[in-house]
Image (cartoon, rainbow, N blue to C red; front, side, top):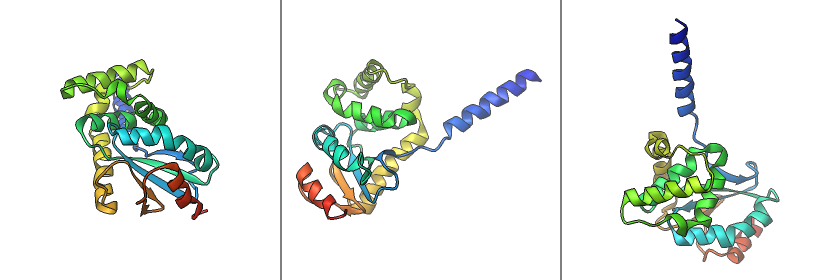
Length: 191
């Protein structure tokens, strides 16, 4: 009887954990007046440029000051980006750190001629960076897969997204050239 009880606790404990709500990757005050949504693909070099060149200044001036928050949404353009998106969503307490690391070091893991090679490079990179992620479970997790795909579907449906990165500010598509100067002009009008 004791064994059955322990097995039930383990099963339901694992089941609850596996069905835990998947959360958006957000940086900033959840109640900020300005909401920036960034639709991105983890293999997109322009998205990496945004993270490395624009996002740090945006974070310093608007996100860290509480004026804005940014939500990173998935818009994978290929299977490598799709799998990397699933990995970034898999560890809820480290999702932002994983996302930032994937963009900062994009050239270290985006290589390979087959899905298997790409996955192996991604797996090796995640391990080397010290993230404790069960790679295989994350890659096959249907709930995370649906979450990532739904981001892409909603982006296309709601904002006519067809390229990455695409920025949405308070539900309006940002149509100017994506640099800090142009973003700042748009954000200042909303403060």
